[in-house]
Image 1: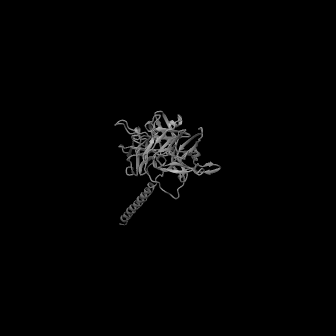
Image 2: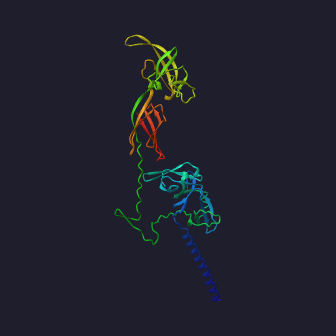
Image 3: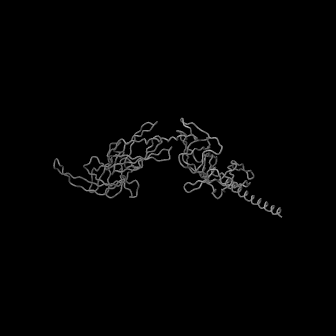
Length: 420
């Protein structure tokens, strides 16, 4: 009986030992499987509310290509079409074009859609001091660390082994060729006691400037030096108004046009009869002997001025005491911002608040050049070595002038304010 009871005790003890060993083995397996790599091979990234699939390696793709995903060693591959590609600013890429391969750094964020061949956009690439402007429709392939817009989301990628392929199938029965064997979608695991070395991994030590270090310093990124604005305001002068009041008949004034062709080339005076309250503009198709001003509608964009009031008064000469009639007209000029001013027959020159701004353009590797703008011609432009300068606005109360500069090699528009 004792022997039989002993066998039962031994059997019971063995069963308990097996349960303990199974529990320990299960805990060890669970702990080891929770250790994952912090090196993410690919990820989902968001910019401006849009999600992109990003692989941390260079690929060569275009919109319309496909990404293929497979789960758990399966033979079935799920295709996901690349709808667009985001190229981030200051990113090194390589473009294959009809004239060859172009390497460079992007100047700004560029989104290339699926119908890029029908677009008229330009990708600006800088390679050192050279800038290449590549037309969208000339691009056949893009190589770089690309952000791809697809239907792939976090639910599509499971927390297990996932295979991905960028090989483009040309035939329906053509097999998938996997470019990347197996990738894991993992989350970084933080460890307060983490070290840069794995267990039993011999360290790699560098000597930099006489000091020992485990990591080489990153190369200093040189900040690109921008071109100077290249414009100097050299002089500001008052501009003479082109009309002078010379005579009148009854209550109707007659104005001499100083800019008419007859006055400048033939020495003949061109006088214009101007009725009160009527808008006038220049007659660009006039013939010799005809007036240079014609009436127009109030809605005409070319209208120049209107005579609001006209009166004849007696003027006493302070030196001789004699009296003489003087015609006085109140003018409203629409090309000068609609300001009103007086012109009378005593004036030999009329200044109506119009200015001429004189500039000197000077940039490296270009010959200096002078040019000028009239204050009445806001939004006028001047081209200097491919750079376009434009009078943006003028404020005569605080005597300031705003000029913009557009450089085809730069995406930004530069602005400078001048005081006069």
